[in-house]
Length: 309
Image (cartoon, rainbow, N blue to C red; front, side, top):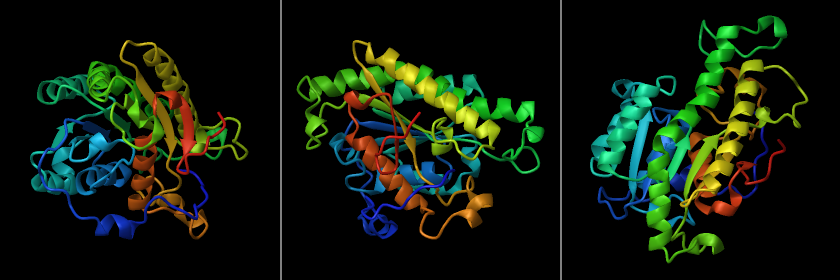
């Protein structure tokens, strides 16, 4: 949750999303998109658009009609996700996953390996900023709570690492199959095809994680945990860039979005600078679709502009 500027040429508006014809529940591609943190907000909307839009990730054409895996802590309480599962029983799989419970992560990875065998796009979306009665953004060092600091780190920084760790073999398998199937190279480099794209991990960060851009202070736990995520993601981009079947990594700042995360702070957001989840998800998927291995390890905002570390 951070401030952002509104682009005069947004990649999509909410009306564009709602008017898009729904894709049939027919698997047309072996491409697999996994969204971690999909019960609501941006994650849920990413799942919806991956299923409903004809071309959800321009530049990564294999995602058309592909399979989608959605995870969340409590699928039984995720009614909107259940509705999508009923509409797309062939293309959508829903699993219980808690990023603070590595056993649950490993269990989902084993299930996805058995059913899908690969993951082409992994989006780590889940994050924690505030919890009623338990955790609130700190405006002073006097409000820093050790338990809240650790909780933020476990969810916002360590969580995406553990998920990537569990799914790494499937990500590399996707690269092996996709690049070979795309003609032995990234035919999507030109942005025209998207065939032969390397697998990619997209971690949602935030502009407030930037050390160089921090001119306001505050939010100790959230800022520090997202800064840690940036460093960890950079590390993974280097390690997986050296693999026989490389995997790309990108950090994304979605802007200020109308979700539960931002709810307590919306009154301070200037008019026109609060994005709908539909617009935010569309913009993020658009960026993910055009990212290639050469872009691995970068930190960009919703306009695909570089953010200073």
